[in-house]
Image (cartoon, rainbow, N blue to C red; front, side, top):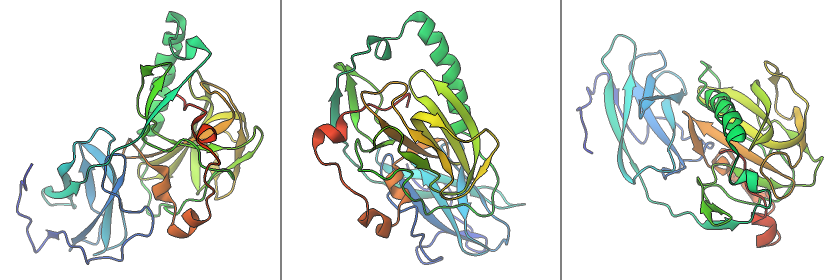
Length: 298
């Protein structure tokens, strides 16, 4: 791919020194990562940006805009195009590079065979629930301020990391599109940032699930919960109790499967943590503890 348009310098340009870089999300332009692209425009109004035909987040203020882009796990490394426009002006295309990244492979044994090979009745339920989950994850709400510095939703060691290439009972499945946090059943799950509850339900794979909208296409999802303490439409603040860790849905033990989505793209939740927060996270005690519980639907 190559530059499609030479940008009009008086109106639009990309520069690496326009704005103070965001501390979170952390810039990591790899498949499954996040690209933070500085923009500048003479317009005081927020630019609109699209990547792979999906609206992406733009944060900052006049002259200091930055696009925050979720990069799909199946993206081929190389040059990517970002379409950006301001009111009353034609769209311009900018480019940014995606670097290669390899993720580990994980093999898991699931004793409940229906969770690996669902029945025809199960498949009908899964199809209906998939539409609900996908609609929530692709939701985009306008917001001037978006909370970007997340805290861990559960106090417990990290277990299965994001991006694992997974095999259930030796059958290949989609890569692990979230982060598993190991914690005993009943451990409180708290909102990592302010948002609005846009979906609540009990799903075949994900079990008891809550989905939060944080604004501008930033969505977070909490799966396998034992119980849910919030309702759809409820506004939550940092630290609001969402529910408790459980083992509902497709699991081999209690844990929280936490998904973060940007522009309808699942990204590594670890990128939402500041370096200071990362320094205080506890690592899994052993490989079995880290990889013992499969994720839900995603």
